[in-house]
Length: 309
View 1 (cartoon, rainbow, N blue to C red):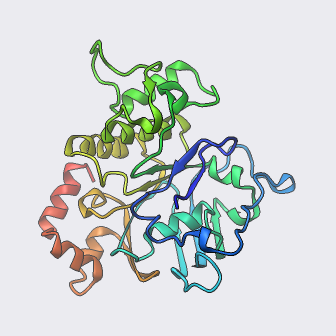
View 2 (cartoon, rainbow, N blue to C red; view 1 turned 180 degrees about the vertical axis):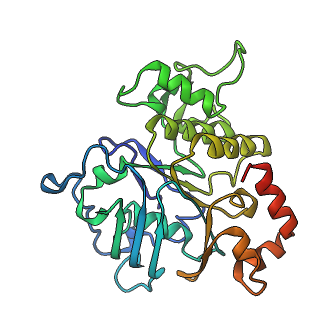
View 3 (tube, rainbow, N blue to C red; view 1 turned 135 degrees about the vertical axis):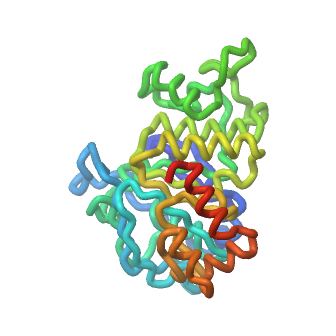
């Protein structure tokens, strides 16, 4: 089963959430006797301000989550605070609970506890009001047939200049090649005429168009080539400054320049600190992951210096 949600909260334009990392951990609800309906799209008496969120600060308090009654929790009493504009990397072995954090934040699966964005309890507002304010760049985005324009802006909310700007900033369009992608370039079913890299960059461009304060990257570079990976990392460093970024990654080097790193194990927080502080804990979980990836402190420092950090 694929978990999907309405990318703009107003239609059935579905977006697959990390096929490899989420689907393998979510119980197939077709095996359940009853399927709970999602919460309301809008709650008229409790709508956040139109400009919300302005800072993108996120607070998790006592979050526990299970995929259905009778199953064990996959998150256990998670509490942490993320400052507005911080870049947070989430690491951990398979089954650690990395993707479950995003499922909770987007209310794909309901949870026990409280998640607040800029002080607004996300469980008290409609799903549309929540999900239109959080951009997600998944590993394998599902793209429906249409054009580049409709993929970026299915409801014609933005002008051409903004769409072209996003294409250039995401490196989906470069130079002046006569065979370059345009807004009217046709997209076949499931984006089959686009490469894996182009689909990832299109997903990135869509996030740039929406310009949300909170962005989730769910293994966004796990299946792309090195060149595309470098383009994505450059865009993240330059175009998402001031945004709150949460990145789920298997490759440590993609998050070494982030402000803090959250290490999960079996649904619990093991460590949460800056990359250097975690590295210097010789018996820590992050240090162990670095050692396995042959990342020494000098390399970590050099990598951050190259990024101007």
